[in-house]
Image (tube, rainbow, N blue to C red):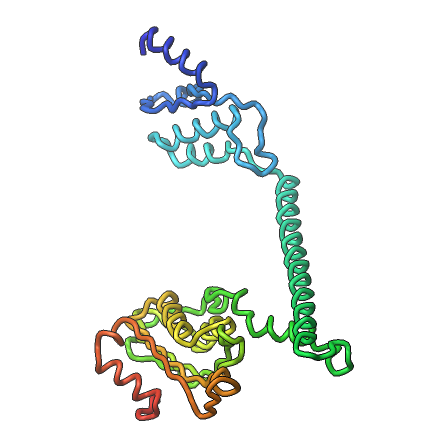
Length: 309
């Protein structure tokens, strides 16, 4: 670099005090003593944050890291590399304890916030229930209804607890490598959900089948996946599709088929009031969608036309 270049570079640094010049293209020397020389850098931070458990870019830490990189990249022996690693400043036990304590405090604060938020929502739901009771002409303070707002709030929070769960949580890592490429079917899984149009129940059964592609999932986890999406305000069509997609995401199978059969209280207790009506929905993915014979086999199994040992 010429004197003019250095002068212009110095001037650029003055105009932009926060810019960082990246110095590259260092040529390794066989003389190991040269690797310990200072490396040009615009970083000039004197306060070391390493003891606080943070990534530090102070001058001393940067120089240590630079020496380590030069030694590791050169033709150094295993002992030299080990010595270079040992030169990295370590976090003291007191600093480590401080970090652990900070994390614990954050976790406690998060739990406390969740509890406070839960209590606030619970109180709002009770107040809303009292308002509803008054609007339909009831006395929310009479003996039979005195605890109804709290019971109703607890029941509704349970029936919609799928909003606070994910499929990753309920499967809990119960996915295993297995050389099995035949159909796996779990039938007659009870489900209970709430129609999002009237917030009244629909109940029934779900049948789930899939063909593994090198991975299988714990059988009970299929029921838990169905439960996650059923414990929300739903329409049956979307519920069917969500269960199928969740199984695809979990095990990446060759194909998935889901069938749901339900009776909807919004058709039984109100509206058309047809007690015997039931609704069947299906959702297929992969080979079940492409191959009619595979799809027919699945429907035959869930209808009881074929039995699996």
